Image (cartoon, rainbow, N blue to C red; front, side, top):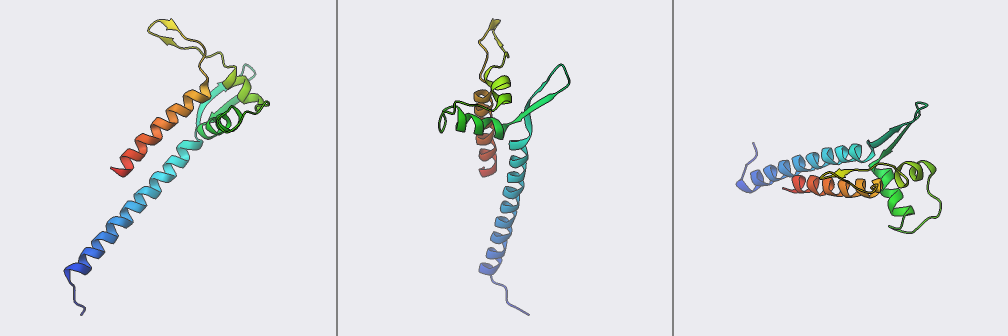
Length: 123
């Protein structure tokens, strides 16, 4: 029968905690991955055509085409139609605002949600 000492027991408990922490982090990463590619904006045309955008598409197109990394003169047609030239307006305290740039709005929202998720994960 082997001897157990407090050092060995402490190491075993520490490894179990690390393994559980890694498992939780991996599960969280999978959830973040699903959240990142889950549609967050959707339009349905009169003819029934559905156009969806996920956070990944919006943030990467914003960064890669609209000045985050560089400016591209040609945007994907659906992105330009629904995101850049979107007729969506908001009322703030009874005052109608100009149409928001939806990709910028989603990028900010995604950033806030990611920071919140990381704070919970690292707490």
